[in-house]
Length: 294
Length: 218
Image (cartoon, rainbow over all chains, first blue to last red; front, side, top):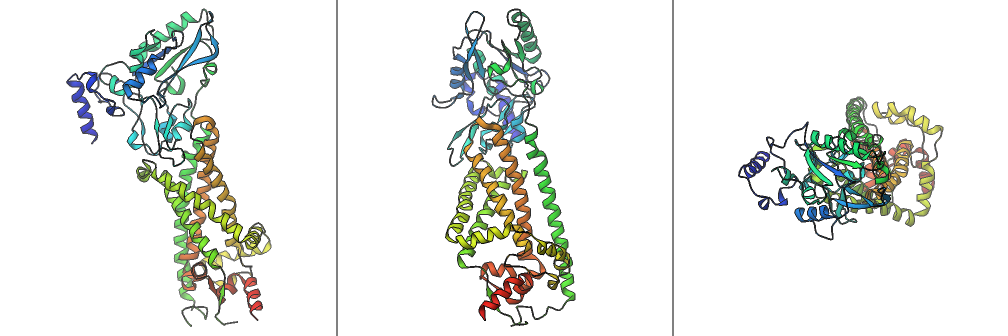
């Protein structure tokens, strides 16, 4: 199955299929391993420069359009004005929020069905056909990104989030949001280049905004969406130093294994008890206690 | 006292409650454990196991409430007993190796209608049942990441409580259905299917209760 899919995508890129033929049905499909864009050390990375964002929401629209997200559903990327946060000239500042595609991704760790996975090209893909709708990814994501759609009461839900436009990036296109951005607030390139651009930009911005930082270079072993923030992360509702909630993973890494071990030991113990008790019982003639003897 | 006589232990209502609750517990366990045992997780895809889990959860919550409300006096008395621990329980613990391994019933100290291990199992359910219910409801209603730490803690406690309850359940199942002594005695399983226990079984396992029952009959 996996090979066929891979071959299929490979053949698609080989025949230089136009984006028209690449439908979102291919989202979540694995990239060809020998895709020219595959590079685990220097993967394709997106830079969001909040100093350049004008809040036009074109990225949102492009995302909806490309990924066929109906208007009534939540978009996979969202641009929000940051309340009370302005540039020095009183211009409103905006944040863009979507999956950060963490290198050390909590969602992958907690997903029970393997619907979430890291692709060779680095980003966090999900297979909606494998989603159980448990919502763990949503509850463990340090950025609170994944969201559920479906019936809350029955729990028949599925998770949604940004897919890093795998179907576009795989064939050398820019992500839909990047392509749509009219102000270059979104850029896409190899990680090293993106980080260099980001650092240069920060050096420039720092003159006026001493708090401005490049966010995502090292956070969670590197995010695949990197932010240029004008002020400190919490003002953008971002965690200062995002991390996988370690204490709560005790559940998966400690309680569950211990549960299996103790259940195994218990069953062994009970089996042993059975053998001993039976042999002891054999020695004793059942007294008149035996119900079989009326 | 060598006579074999049957003593009524559980009413029909109590037995129906037991089996309904047991069925709900089993369904909950199986649909929950799917998420932890990796080769089985594929069965959770699509969320149907969660829906079944939730329906069973409603039964698991309502059954004891109905039992409590329809049998207020006995239920409350039983709950009170579950929290009463004393020297006789220690005596039982001391007698455990002789009983469970050496299959010697005569070593058991006199006990009331609920003996030490029955009490322990009941107490375990009394405490961990509500814990599972509360954490389960929290996970049910928290379908947005507004209170991530609450959900994270819930899942941790839910899992922990489940592990403990499930291990206790295995012991319960073993002692009351599989243990060699139980198999020749009928014992508690018969009490839960037919409502009665054999006189001698009651005499060795719940002596005080047995003597009261005999006294009443006379």
